Structures are given as structure tokens and as C-alpha cells.
Amino acid sequence: MKKIRMFMLIAVIALLSACNEETSSSESAAKDSGSTDKPIDITFAEPARILSFAPLYIAIEEGYFKDQGINAEISSGGGGSQVIATLLSGDSQFAINAPRAMFSALDSGEDLIAIQSLNSALTYEVALSNKYLESKKIDFNSPLEKKLGALEGATIGIDQIGDSSDVYLRYLMEKYNFDQSKMKAVKLTGSGPKIGGMQENIIDGGVQSPPFTALAEDNGAGKLALRLSEEEDYADLVWEVVFAKKEYIDNNPEIAKKVVKALGQGIELARDNPEKAAATITSYFDGIDEEMILTSLKGLQATYVGNGEMTKSGWDNAQKPLVEFSDISGVSSEHDTTEDVLWTNKYIKEAFSE
Image (cartoon, rainbow, N blue to C red):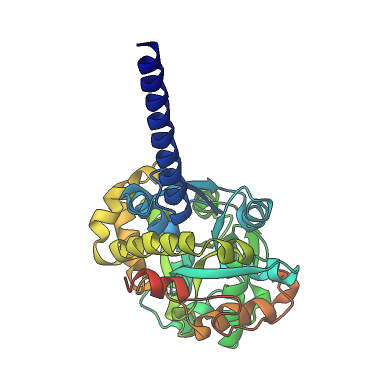
């Protein structure tokens, strides 16, 4: 009887061992194939909270990232330099910012690559105070050339001296043969200080992405005078690009594909259903009501093209003003804008062909 019991015990132990080995083998196979239920943690670095980044917020709130098995978080604030620092330190895996931040890092020898562009046109808008608009006899419907001429002698609030808004506006004035040096730029970071400055007649206007002009009008400080995308070159320009370390993308192509898939769906919703998009992301903008966000998103609809595909001409139009005004932009080198050098549509094509 003891021998029988001993035999049964050995048999049970052998069976349990086999089960454990099979389970371990299955777990290992699942890990190797990438088919695990555990979500991938990804952090996106953004310079500030603005509507140009709406597809990112939409992708989070609508569950597009979760559908791809990604737990997405945002590191927000600090401007372009902080975005780059966060990316290079490894605290974030992806950065979303204007091309200037990426070009500056490339100038410093960093190996980065862009995989998507949230906007396909420059989103900056200029609001001018009611008093200044009246003095210059212009409004939003005035010819672009007349509106740019009115900026000679104006004092304009910007987030940072020499930032993208400063450079692209000055380049546009110069292109139309106006003296950009006669426009005085004053550092006023964020919408509130600019609006306050316009109300107190300290500045004549400000330049920033939406919802700045909608806020200025809502507060009675001024009105939308011009969208920089009225200029042909700026209507074809990569903007708010999604980029990362090239090494990271090379080592994680599936993650890159999942990221552009989720963001591409966010771009689609922002373009095709701004009403739903506005309701989805209102919580990201404290103190700004849904109607104002909707108005701003409708103004941005034309910038949400396809699924974020990029073009060489869009990169050329983004780079040229920065290099021409290198003394204030900090971008001194002209980089090769051929596809698959510093940018690629590869992952978008793969993600949306499946």
C-alpha cells in the first residue's frame, strides 16, 4: 500500500511539473510575440496646452491608444527646450512640438526622426486690439498684404523672443516687402497676459495658436486679424510634429505604428466631427467653454489632413524661415528634408493599410 501511495505521489508531482512547464512556455511565447495583455506605458512631451495638439487629447479620451494596447500620458509645459530635455533624458518616449525644437536638437547632433505631423499647416493666429484695428482700418477680411503692412510699428505679444511665432511672422512680413524690424515683440507667455496687455493698451496685439484669438474676442480685448496659413507656403507646412530618438523608433517599430494609428484617428475626428471632438477635450482647457473650443477647432479643420502624412515641401516651408532668421531662431544648419532622412511616412502607411 505504501508503494502504491508513493507511486501516486510521484505521478501527481510529475503532472504538476509538466503543467508548470507548459504554462511557462506559453507565457514566454506570448511575450516573444508581443501578445501580452499588459499595456505599454508611453509618455508624450508637449510644450504647452494648445488646440493644435487636439488629436493627442482626443486619442487619449476616445480610447484610441487603449485600443492599441497603449497607456498614454502627457508631460506638459516648459516650452520646446523642456520637451527636448524630457525626450533626451528618456522621461518621455515621444515629443510633439513645432519643427523648430527638432531642428535645434538636430543642430546639436541629436539623432531624431519624425513619424507624423498633427497639422499640415501653420496654426498661428494674430489678434489685434479693437483700437489698433480701427486705427489701421483693417479687419480679418482685408487683403493679407494690407494686414501685414499694418504690423509695421505694432507692439505684439509673443510667448518667447525668437520663438516660432516670432520667426514665422517676421519672415512673412519680409516676404511681402515690409520692414519686420519695425514690429516690436514683447514677451508675454500665455493667452492671459496677452489679452490683459491688449485691454490695457500695453500691446497692440498678440500671436499664438488657438484658442487665443477666440479668448481675446470673448474678453472684448480684440479680434482675429489674420491666420498665418493665409500665406500659401504656410498652408503647406508640417506643424506639431511627432518625433522620437531614431534608435527608439528603430528598436520599437510596432510601437511607432500603434502611436501613429491612434493619433491618426484623433486627426480624423478633429477634422470630420469637431462637435464631438470639442465635447471630448473640454476638460483639457480649464476656464474655456465647449462652444469656444468648437469655434477654434472649426478654424483648424483645414490643418487636419489625412492621417498626419508629411511632405518634403511641408518640411522645406517649415525650415526656410528658421534658417533665414537663424540669429533669433537658433537653427543655423539646413538639413536634408528628403523622405526617410529626418522624417518618414512609413509607419502611417503600414498602420492604415491593415
